[in-house]
Each structure stands twice: as structure tokens, then as C-alpha cells.
Amino acid sequence: MAKLTHLYAHEILDSRSTPTLEAVVILDDGSSGVASVPSGSSTSEHEAKELRDLDPNRYLGQGVLKAISNINSEIATKLVGQPIDSVASVDKFLIQLDATPNKSRLGANAILSVSMAVTKALAASAKLPLYKYVASISGLTDQLFVPQPVFNMINGGKHGAGNLDFQEFFVIPNNAHAFSASLETGSVIYHTIKKILARRGAIHSVGDEGGFAPNLFTNLDALEVLSESISETNHKVGVDVELGLDVAANSFYKDGRYIIKDRSSPMESSEFIDYLRDLNGQYHLRILEDGLYEEDWKGWATLTAELGQTTSIVGDDLLATNPALVKTAMEQKACNAALIKPNQIGTISETIEVVKLSRQAGWKIMVSHRSGETNDSFIADFAVGVGADYVKFGAPARGERVAKYNRLLGIETELKQ
Ligand code: PGA
Ligand code: ZN
Image 1 (cartoon, rainbow, N blue to C red):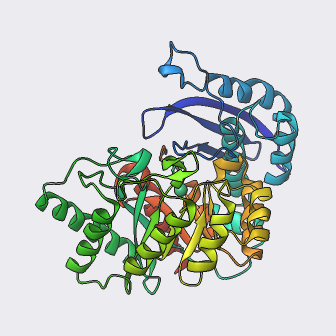
Image 2 (image 1 turned 180 degrees about the horizontal axis):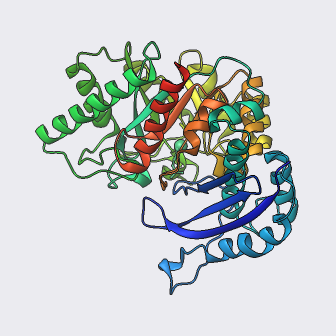
């Protein structure tokens, strides 16, 4: 069994120019792993906690030197020289060392970077590509495949220009295509959206996830632009290319009501569910993520009962990749699909457990990036290795997003050999 000889971390910038960590693990057989962690902006209350320095004299308080020092001193002191038999045992050690329910002492960012780097180093030590190693530790024995991509083409909410209430407007090429064909479709539609927005005089810029952040005013305008773009590329909307939304309803839920610009007055949960049902009737959404506030459990159950037959009702902020919340959602039939973000829970083995639990419930699995990303393509391998149905890595543009999609192209080619 290989021993860990080096563990250290340093600060790098994420795609929003905010510091994050990159960790390095080296084993005595020469294998190594380098991994960096992302960061969200529209976060759930229930996520594991990133440790930030809060020193106003560095990076506006967003530095991560304390988390790095936790790796370089406390964690490294205990792990260097130790035999490393599995990711699960390292994760268990890190969880016990942290000793808080939400990883706030050492920092979920510190813990996850070590967990990811150990996973990569052990894959290298086993002489396996990362996706095959993840498949082996997640017990996946089925034929591996590349998941269906969900492209976030228009960015609103906290990721956009401040005018659209909904956070993400998806274009989803139908899974009849190979991944490479879906990526081409996504790319051509991306260029077409740009053209159509320019024609309407609505181009503004791109948002945090590489999608356009246009000068459109209503959520319906954005869905119309997507439909028009799909039709202009000779695809049939709702047939060979489908639409979806990450409503991220937390961000416009205030004092028990949903407030969006499309409606002049705030809506009760039942009224907002009626609104979503009408929207679904019009646009036949394949995916509806975080349609309601993360504590509106009754509303979630109604939404799933009403739309769940035809639409993936995805819990992101609702579930926070947390096994206890997944169990509650299973009992309450609150959703039928899980968004999976490793940094919401903070270790790779716990993330794998959440995938397994979600699959037992018969849910769809969508592996996701965060709005603040690095060029690490770990989650592309991870998605293939756990047999995810969908991947959500942003628009098919911007380096930190295409790093993941391009890695999937590489895996697709390798799986054909
Ligand atoms: P976040 O957004 O990374 O800013 O949390 C992503 C999402 O809500 O899916
Ligand atoms: Zn989301």
C-alpha cells in the first residue's frame, strides 16, 4: 500500500477572481494528484462551510490562507508518512479531525481539496484513468457512458445582470445523440443565441457560468430567445432539443412569498406552483431545478406530484448533496432528481454515498459545477464514474466550463477504444 509523502496547498484564483485552494498529494510510489475546489454564490443554508480569512486587507476578506494552513500544518502532520488505502478512510479521518457537523473548523474547501487530490493520486497509483477509478470505488459495474449535457445558455438571478429572476436557462440536446454530437448542437445554438440577442439589441455580456446575461426583462423572453435559437438551427424544440430551468427560487422568496417581475404581485406557494405548471405546459421543461424555496417542503411535494411524470424535478438547494436531506426528500416525495455538487457536502466518499442513496430512490442524477470554478475537470470524470444521467457544467464557452466538456470528449473517445 502506498504511503503519503507530501501534502500541501496554495492559493489560486477561481473564475470570478476570488481565491480558492489547490492541493497537492504525492505518494511514495511516485503517484500524485493535484486538485482545486470551486465556490458557489447562490448557496443553500445546509451546505458544508467554506473557510474564508475575513481579513479585509487581503482579497476583500475572501482569502483562504487559514484553510491552507490547516492543510499544510494540522492535516499534513497527521497524514504524511501514513499508508493510504482508500479515499473513504482518508475522508473519515478528515471528518473526525474537523469534528463539526458542517466542516466549518478546518473548512469544507480545505477538506474537499485534500479528498479530491487523494482520489486523483490513488487513481494514478492504481494506473487507472480517474473516471474508471471513481467507478471502481462507487461500485459501478455497468457499462460506462458519457452523461447528457445540460447547457446553461442564459444567466439570470445572482449570476446575471440583475434583470432576470430565474438563474439558469437550459438547452438540453436529446440523449439520442452521442455526447460529441450534443456538444456540437449546444455550441451551434450558443452562437445562434448570440446572433438573436444582437438582432434584438439585447446583448449585454456573459454571466458567471458563461451563458449570456442579456437585457431581457421577463423570464418568458429568455425562454422565447432559446426556443427561437433552437428552431433557427433546424432543431425541434421539445423534441430533439429540450428546455429546462434552474429557477433558484431561494433568491426571490421573501416573507413567505415568491416575487418575480413577470407578475405584479407576490405569489403564495400554491400560486407560484400554478405559474410553474403553466410555464411547463408552454415549454415542456425536461428539467426544473429549485422551482421552490428550500424549506417549502409541502410545495415541493405538490410540484413533484403534478409535474414529476414528465419533468425531472431537481433538488439543489433543497438537498445540498446531504444524505439526511435526501432521506427527508425521499420520504416526502419532494423531488425526483438530485443535483450533486461535491463541495456542498465536502468529501468525495460522502458525495458518492449521496449518489447511491438518490439512485436507490429511482431519482435522476445531475453532477454540477459551481458558479465560481477552476480549470480542474475532476467532476467530468466523477460524473462518468458514478453513472450520472446529466452533467451541468455551464455554457459551452469560457475556459473553466469547457475544461469539463472537453474532458468528456476525451473520455468518450477513450470509451470507444
Ligand atoms: P452556485 O449556483 O454555484 O452559485 O450555487 C449553481 C446552482 O444553483 O446550480
Ligand atoms: Zn441550482
